[in-house]
Amino acid sequence: MNIIPRAAVINDLSGFGRVSLTEAIPVMSAMGIEVCPLPTAVLSTHTYNFKNYTFCDMTDEMQKIIEHWKALNLHFDAIYSGYLGSRNQIDIIRRFIDESGRDAVVVVDPVLGDNDLDCTQAVYSERMRDILGGMKELVCAADVITPNLTEACLLLDEDYIAHPLSDSELCGMLRRLSYLGAEKVAITSVMTSTGEMSVGAYDKAENKYYKIDCGYVDRPFHGTGDIFASVLTGALLKGESFIDAANIAVGFIRRAIALTQQLGENKIERGVIFEPVLAPYFSGTKSEKYYKIING
Ligand code: PXL
Image 1 (spheres, rainbow, N blue to C red):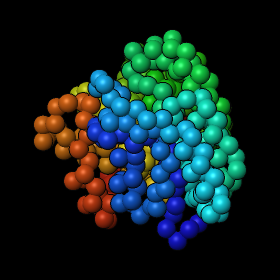
Image 2 (cartoon, protein in one colour; image 1 turned 30 degrees about the vertical axis):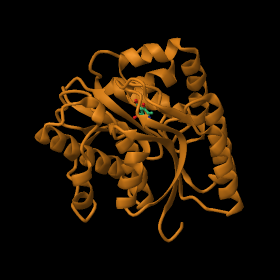
Image 3 (cartoon, protein in one colour; image 1 turned 135 degrees about the vertical axis):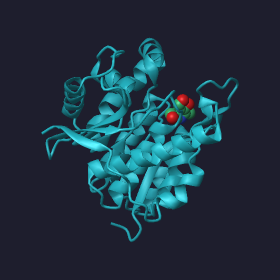
Image 4 (cartoon, helix red, strand yellow; image 1 turned 180 degrees about the vertical axis):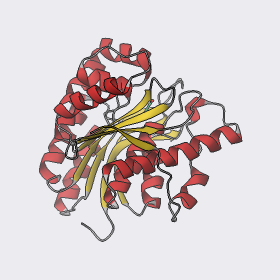
């Protein structure tokens, strides 16, 4: 461990729209983590609902950044990846993990899309099929994975589940994802049969399955998956257990969503207003307990 836990955070930098690095850096820094960003692309906005966004691919730079970090002999306590734009980038990150991730916690947020619609696109576009193939390999190298429900179905080659999930369906899906290799699995954006939006979590070592209640969410909010994975990684680095780290992440998102609704931010592509929540949240406030064991 470094004095301040250090994380290599591999994600895109989207100028407007609150996703990826513009969430990971402030959130994890506020948690007391040293964030070393490895940008996969630089965009004017994220790609959801915006037209004519700019996109600068950073693949060549990524390789150079990694080489320089290697020369500096940097030690990372976590390697955390999000949006990767090509199969080539996935291979670069896979090598980076193999070479420098020996005692780092490896968190892979397998960003592939959201909602059934995106799922369909992901299966039919050749580029996305390539990325999906790469992601399936990358998740094998992870200690922790955080797919949303769409991504979970894609990784498992299963049809998207449009109906609310029963606890046993959720547990089955968590278990099947864990067979891909990661010890700890969280599935976000799960509508459960009891009506609440939830995160499902499974810790293989403990053999316990959890459902974390995200409260009432009246529409999809953009960028919450990135916040979830960022807070989770930060909390793991601060020594929290997996379930407590996931619970802290859900608690933070619940507050950001509540504030976003209260302030009337009504464009889903702008993401959730998290900035005013950030400082007080991480200065000693205790998170409420939103989870319960649903198996094990
Ligand atoms: O939040 C996922 C994400 C990350 N990066 C970019 C995106 C999206 C989702 O749309 O467009 C560039």
